Amino acid sequence: MKNDTTTIFSRNIGLISEKGQELLADTCIAIAGVGGDGGLLAERLVRFGIGKLILADPDTFETTNLNRQFASNKNSLGKNKAVAVAMELLLINPNLKISVYSEGITKENVKEIVKAADIVVDELEYSLPELSVMLHREARKNNKHVFMGANIGWGASTFCFAPGGKTFEEHFGYNEKTKTIDPLAYLKGLPSYFETEVIENVLAGKAPMPAVASSVSLVASVIANEIIFFIVGIREPLTMPQFLFIDLFDLSINKS
Image (cartoon, rainbow, N blue to C red; front, side, top):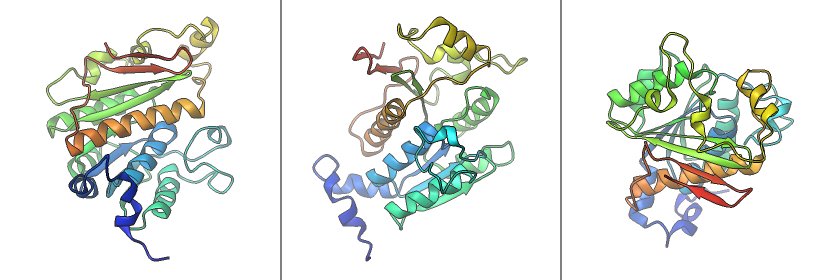
């Protein structure tokens, strides 16, 4: 089938101008972590018309990913997430330019990745905050924004760290010695539907955070919109110390 990039994104026109689509096609987004939120965010960005992506993730798909992660299916189980996601994205837009780092973000490649990107996305594991710190510090050196998000229960928290603004380390209380953060900083407040035992087990590292497809979709959609608005000049993103929390359970939005 003949590929026609103009036709692929023709339904965007009216909300995004033709000039805006040209800007998106020329923009490179680096996504560190393409499991749940990051993988689906990549898909949303490609459907908007982002023309260049850098995907970094060392993990492989497993059965527990099937309930929510883009590109996870019976054929991709055991395969590297960045590689599998890239293959799916090329089926959407064959002209997409993708660089894949199947080793994930490392001290050896972080400078190269950040330098090549116009915007950086941090979807790294919250249990490895030292990697996020490394990524954010490199982005600040290069005067680049870092977007990130987390699916929380039936909702989503989304953040944008601007150069010169409040840092990841400051917001999450990063401890240089122990290499730990306060995971509750992802929240505006603990959702009422979370049982205390569930949260205690998550914070103690005894269980993973429960995650469902709708919340992953919410994170990906909100961050995608913020990035697209920023690139095409529709509006500036909400930046730290302000961040957004949307909860689909009680239909609440908090951006204070």
